[in-house]
Length: 131
Image (cartoon, rainbow, N blue to C red; front, side):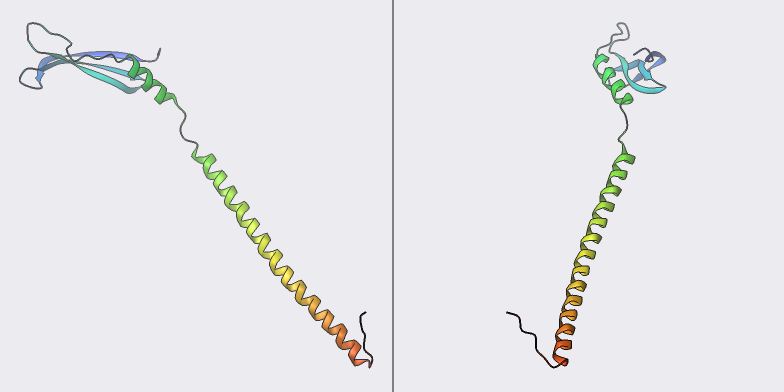
C-alpha cells in the first residue's frame, strides 16, 4: 500500500453525462506505475457539488494489489512435467514391445532346437523314448 498513489483531477469545464449529471473530475489509483482503479466525480447542481456516486475503493484496491502481486502460472514446470511423463510412457511401451518380441523369438528358437535334436536322434537310427 505504500507504493499506491492517489491522483485527483478536476476538469476546467464539466462534462455532461446525462440531463442531470455532470462530471467535474476524476480520482485514479496507481500501483507500480499501472492504473489500479478510479472513479469519476459527479454533481447534479452547479451550486452544490457532491460525490453522489462515490464508492468505497479500499477493499477493491486491496484485491487489485494482491492480484497484481500474485505469481504467474508456472507454464515451464507444467510443460517439463508433461514431456517427462510422455517420455516415461514411451520408454515403458518400447520395453514391453521388446520383451514380447524377444519372447516370441526365444520360443521359436527353442522350438527349432527341439526339432533339430529330434531330427538328429531319428537320423542316427535309434529312438529316444521318455518315460
